[in-house]
Amino acid sequence: MALKSTIHRVQLQVADMDRHYYAEHALTVAQHPSETDERMMVRLLAFALNADDALAFGRGVSTEDEPDLWIKDLTGAIDLWIQLGQPDEKSLRRACGRARHVILYLYSGHGARIWWDALAGRLAALDNLTVVDVAPATVQSLAGLAAKNMTLNATLQDGMVWIADGDQAVEVALEVLKAATRPA
Image (tube, rainbow, N blue to C red; front, side, top):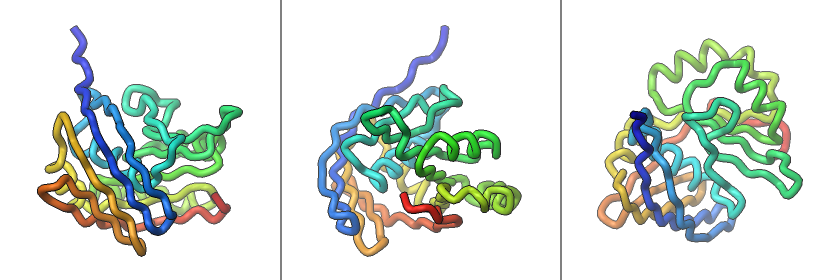
């Protein structure tokens, strides 16, 4: 018998002063049986960083040809493709060919840096790819916020990011390893 996903209910309030985006999102997040709390919380962080009324979760872990999050326009064209982890070069190139902008969030610390160092030169020409590394301490702190029912506040201001649940706040440490050169 196959294991079922764990369902998390999340009330996410986003105050992004850099983009002038303020909204509350009622999210249902399915955590695949093989997905860790760390990865699920990085998905929520990615949602907060790119919050938009059209941003939706893909099937992610269980589907190779869909991202973790995405925004499609009214014609079905993909405006934003958000992937987590360390995908292979071929799937990243395919994503960059399908979407106007691709953001990859790395979150596994030293292993992610080794992966990035090996591929950075070959991916440099992908002008619609942004690669962001989430610090290991941030990932661990975010995992500490994981619960079946969460009320989270995301505050983004002057390039700084905080995620809070009422009891504790996590200052998010991000490093952009590659910025897209084509306007998004």
